[in-house]
Length: 181
Ligand SMILES: CC(C)(COP(=O)(O)OP(=O)(O)OC[C@H]1O[C@@H](n2cnc3c(N)ncnc32)[C@H](O)[C@@H]1OP(=O)(O)O)[C@@H](O)C(=O)NCCC(=O)NCCS
Image (cartoon, rainbow, N blue to C red; front, side):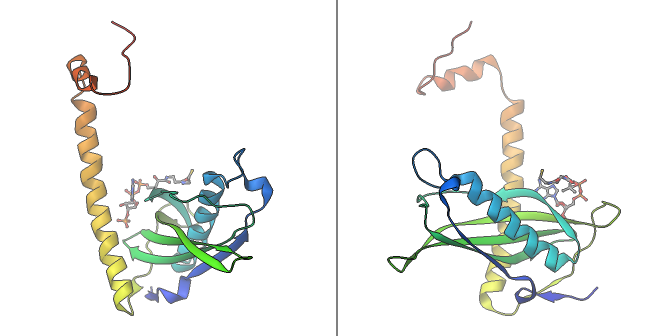
């Protein structure tokens, strides 16, 4: 299986934010943005893998600035990391106000995708050829994110296992009321 460059599968989807994408407050639904991000990640990952891919997890989803009706959104996707059957696709979202001619970076998120063969079993993906410092940095960051998410998952499992009625004392400073005995 031949290794592929990052450039080979880089994908951009540009879409105008139309009124039917908006919530009652007139801003674009986060779910609409996630759906387009997922589609972009899928296209990018499948192109690198040469196979269809499924979404396993999404990291760093933060919508810190609202997206307005009329904004022109571009979703830039690159393969940041490959494992055996998994790939991490980074998606950068840029919103342009076409009237003002301004652009802002609304968020960057990381989609872990897994390649599947025609038998629906996970399948090997090509190695990734890194051609510049940015691509090396993104690969290293993805490795670190993978390591940290394993630590996080294990810690949360410990929290789950350690739960008992005595844990409720930790709620004293919180804005909740335990409404049962
Ligand atoms: C993704 C899926 C194939 C993994 O199945 P699995 O039995 O855990 O397979 P494996 O243990 O062989 O893992 C396959 C790869 O997924 C990665 N993986 C599994 N769970 C993961 C998780 N929670 N987060 C990140 N990567 C994960 C593994 O690290 C492995 O990567 P590698 O091959 O590069 O080393 C399976 O969970 C699946 O089909 N899920 C449904 C996906 C889907 O339908 N998504 C659409 C959203 S509804």
